[in-house]
Length: 607
Image (cartoon, rainbow, N blue to C red):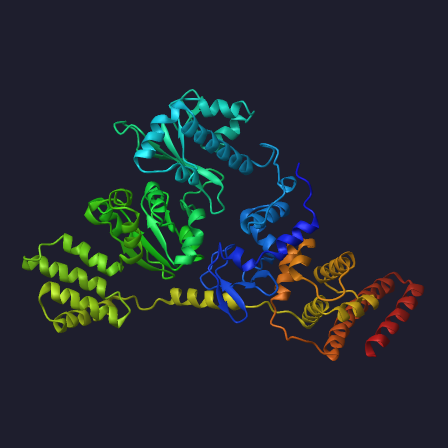
């Protein structure tokens, strides 16, 4: 078991960490007013409602309600415990973590998902050892070296080798007493007709696939024998921890560079990503053999608004690029194409032309989608033939008409006019006719789309409505947290909030102040560490309210009066109910006593 992390170390990590730096690894933040905003990483949205207050070192989503400090963010984002989150944040900031604080999980004693994560981590270590340290791995290591992969690069991507053995990994986990049920769930094994398990991956270079946090959740195995009848690549099946529609290869390594460069490069294969990384182009990812899903696009939208497609330069690669562009219609992004010359794939280009040329291509050779598409159309037509010329013109105009920018339209009209040796005026007339035709063919209205966009806009900015009592409680608790004289006054008066959520935070505040011996300003981020998750959400919401810098005494008195009167009104209702019950049973003595209480409460209220 790990030693309990002392408060001194938590304080050190807190003082040396800026929440903006941590959250920026996951969310693309933009300044708006005094805070920063981005798309919430905890739910899908199109209008940013996720806010970070750098001055208070907290976050809050105005839509889903999640909020807290940097540790709460990591706990939510990566499903970690508080001690694990403290260690994670420390490591992000290169703060040394003493060995005794490191969490030492008892092997395979956790939930199925945690067990699977540990199994994949152990499998990766075994495959890596076989590749780098054993004779069995020599052919695979030679293959990788022939592809110019250095030891450092192999270690960066945790590449390994699964030998041609039916039960090496199976025995490895059976020796660790892993149940057959978990072995079947893991996706690391296949099953024969007799129900016997055997290693799914054999005689393959093993490329681990990680989640956004760097946990290994799957493998892609590349066959060594080119003449083998089996598939060139074999990927893990979906499991409790691996959903291919949510996963992007190399996202964990690429996040920082994607944010800094302002774009992500979408490659076709894992080896292309690795080769690009080797060449210094480190903002590349690959999907799991499918077009980008809505979930993958949402993850990317938190990091960038520019996607550049870099597929193979051969005919199948060009076709795949065209298909990708027709499917990438999400309006949150701009798109570009990096075309590899000489019909090479990115890996071949890096190996034959060198890293510098590939960097130049990736940084300066980005085409617009329309430019790529027009060149793609040209490949299919003989422009010396009049029929083909008209077909090419027709297809080109159907793409140009989709453009919004007048400058862009004029530029590509000019290119097509030059290509076809006709005037721009003639092409513009054809374009105008096409626009009219499209307008006529449009549905009568797109009411549902309009309503949906309007709803998204409204719900992203809507705030809950509170009655007078709860407004008073929220504002009073805010001032009590931020001004010592207000909380001292409330404590001395024996004041209590009506709603338990606010009372619970107030009591936690008083305990925190007493234990920490705080006389002045409360550190909101640090105070959050003593609260339960729901109370952290509520505190973040309160601290994100648009409040003035100071209060006045009359305002505080009004809030207290509203809350106390509400309490008295509740007492009145309760006494009246008891009076009715006493009258029904004919208890005159109780009626007299309750009537006196009623008079007393009414007198207090009237004053």
